[in-house]
Length: 108
Length: 121
Image 1 (cartoon, each protein chain N blue to C red):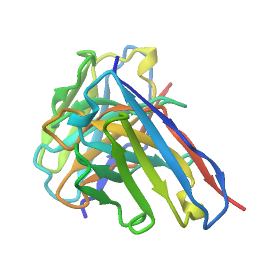
Image 2: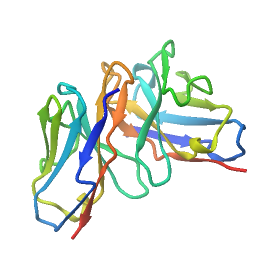
Image 3: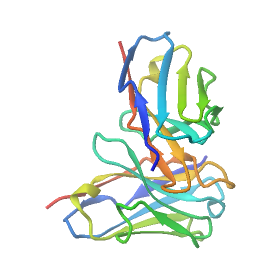
């Protein structure tokens, strides 16, 4: 089973700053990686799929990169509404879907 | 507007049963794979089960296999999760989610708002 490890666990930044979140896979997952955003009390929302494609309606300040085992979610200039928990997710043959443990992006 | 609305959560004793429902609207329900994902209080996301568009193929996480059954009624645009032999560790918010497109089994987009299942005596 592929394990996804996200870092850091918590990231403290100010609005306007650039955020860089990492997701590392225990073995190559090619480009089969997605990122989700979850705000308190809300369902997750798909941000990025296939490592670098923005989902419908996602602002351009969100971008994804990477392939193989190392992936990055970048938020170019943080807005107040971006402070949330972010999860990466992999899809495979079996188990078909695994999630990272999450990175909490908090206001500094 | 694409919408998923879960219902059926609540408090149940260990060993008990519960059936969750997910009402879909705003898209052609019968064309998409559907999923259940859960989140224990204060914890991360865990995939639970999936079903293909016509209901002929299902898969389960090892932790629920043999206890949970996913199904769908395409005439009613509704997804179900029958949960039997519930354990304390099944306590979580249960989300239904749609596959992003009709030609992929995953990524999950959109998600419902979730329904809380609490297993406790």
